[in-house]
Length: 196
Image (cartoon, rainbow, N blue to C red):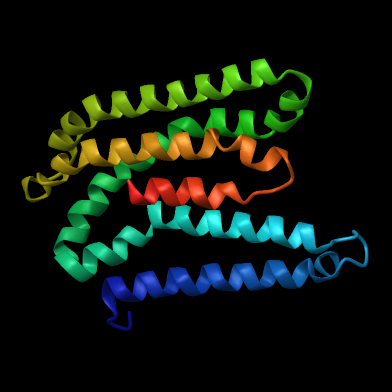
């Protein structure tokens, strides 16, 4: 409405996310002070490493929009965004496994580490299977669903499927980073995937 276009949409998303973060910190301020929960330096260090890790995940899941606009323009962003919606379907299809697994992975790791490792690898394979299915199905769906002006989106699908596969690896194979009460390797792993 204010004629800021795509930049305005991205700025509004950044502002709203920041407001949610500030509101969350404010709401949990007593817990963060440690008056109720004995927070110490090790806890803050752990949280700091997780925040660094999340920053790298943001680079895999959103920061590319800024790069596309800066280097290729808004028209290319529309093409990239169309392909990105199909990649998002991969994440949505994987969400039931993610919700089921993330709720129990640490308990299972303590009770049966071998089974935990097996289910982690199974999750990675499941994610790769979904990505492969989208790799085959997306170009056909795009041909019927999108106008010809978006045909370049089909060329991006293999790369986005690869990125989603790397994301599943990053999310699932990092359990060892958190078990020893130190998340220092999580940013290294996610940063490594950014480098790739």
